[in-house]
Image: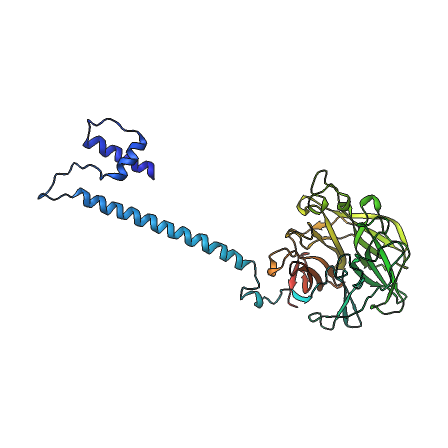
Length: 403
């Protein structure tokens, strides 16, 4: 636009002052902004018309520029506000009207495991304080309707520990019932001879009660030290009655630094492994099978696997990225065969910003595929448990449903 204005002014100057030497672009710009343009129109009745035209033209330009500036300001302010509303912030009135949004169920209760027994829902959580031996190794909460949860105060489902582990940092417990009525509690225990690294332990209930207490076995059930150990076990019984656990080989714990110790090259493969067990829940059958691993889109790792079977398909829920980052999420994949291959869904089930959540992850889904518990950041130091209903469609798409 400015270039066109210069060309118009140049033509007018050539017509009105042919003997004037040519001027450079900067001199033309200065002159055109400080003086009214010359005119060849004769003065009528002694009145100067050119200055009036210049004043009107200047006013028009100023008005146009002001209008454009105001429009830009409005756009800059309005668009971010609209985007923030679309993120379903809790301050947005529409947030409370979403019937399928997850329900905040329990403060400071990360990595929840889930089981239903005689109509009661039971959740088991990571111990509430890192490196604190005074808190329960395995805290427990219960619910009759899946919406309202109550923590069992001053109760530890596993009051004693195994000889191979430290007394702190018990993570991600999960419970399943054996055929003899006893219950098995799988968990991540910190190695006494290799602190800051974990392996998968198992504890057995002393009675036929899913609340325990549980007595730990004297050896880990899965401990791939070549992969940095193992965490996040989840139990699964297939339709043929065979018992399995899925867990994360904790390779990023021996990585080369960066985010979650595995974002600096060479980046290590972090696999999710499937291990068949004897009915005792302790004895491995064969070697573990890798069923998923971290890809570029997952950042430094995948973790928190959970396996169910419904509508003839196996569904593997898992998290990716570092749990401390906004990229932490809940994803899923499905397969016609237990050992895969698993087809990843096109998008995460939950990610930061959905329903106002921050860093959702660590999900466990009920075996019928209708309920889910998971954690998300709820302030600077806590991860809260959330409860949600889910729906799995015939085209293998998982969505949140009304609770």
